[in-house]
Length: 485
Image 1: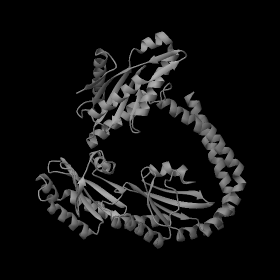
Image 2: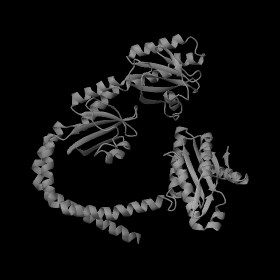
Image 3: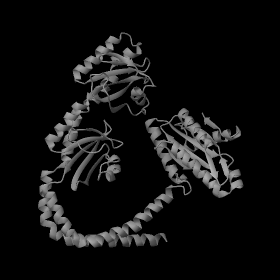
Image 4: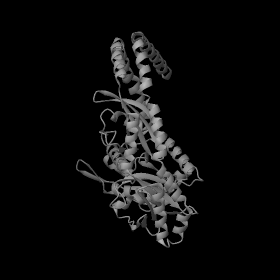
């Protein structure tokens, strides 16, 4: 049967190729002269990728300097020695920050000590950082960055009243033994950055703006009239995923009846995407008019082929991929695809020296539920538990149905103590969840074993440790979370 499907697919591909080739041969002879001259003009007048490269090169000089400055500050022996020596004579550090600010023409320079939580600014000690203050959340976010991430770039209000909105570069500082001792950095005024963007726009006659990894527009010039996110931009929303998952892309979309050409490029130091746009020109309109007129010859054939492709290969392939990677009952990952996620997480953990934890979770007394209420209700209980799991985990976490009533949770970049907190939260949520069926109210609990990956062990050894911890949770009376050291 597999050979038959392959042969049918092969025939379909050949037929598709012949039809498309024949249709475009028929139109290419008519449109060749117009297309050739128009494309030549387009290449000469609208070199969008080259423009993007030029702007990117200028950004390397104009916008990446704060990252370089912050890196130097974080590595400065004076800053580290001063912090280690109990922060004596704060005026020395304040003078140092003022010198940095004056030398590099930044709007602010700062250092926050992990030990004292003092916020040192070029103008003095502004305040003491507190974990309950929403305005200080940036510090604790930077402190909790992954080991491989040394800094972040964010936009926020100025440190003093006379400062406007600022682009901050927050850089982690470590002592000479690798211990975290604070965060330092500098800031650029958003107005200054906007001036740079407007300079690029005027010089290259393009629209220039930045978006972050979530698709939010972070910086733009005065002439920008788009939405706050690319997902909310008409015509561009369909391309948002492709843009945000590729280091670079050259795309086009329709906006207000005009074709807009877009070149996106990730600026890795900022973790933002540089977006350069250009609307169609007259030569492009002429080319499109001629092209669409000629394309009418093969329009019916092309539409027919696309419909056949979508109704056969596309649907069949998506169904196979879904069946191969997803548990039919719960919609979470099955064991086959989970093993791929698991192996990848182990490799990344070894390479980045990052933590990885797992939770092996089992529904308590599930056989009693099946025996009492039937397998249909048992399936409902399993689906309810899986729904709670998906709602309580991060996007990068993976839920797998490991057995009949067992689930295995993969938690990348999460230490054992935090994984235990997650397991406890899940246990509490499930214990409070009431499943009502007809006149019955079913309450279920779960037991969990939690283990953190030891970089010297094999994956199956990690799972075995979590299994032993789960067994201990059952022995302790169920509805328990037990961690494996």
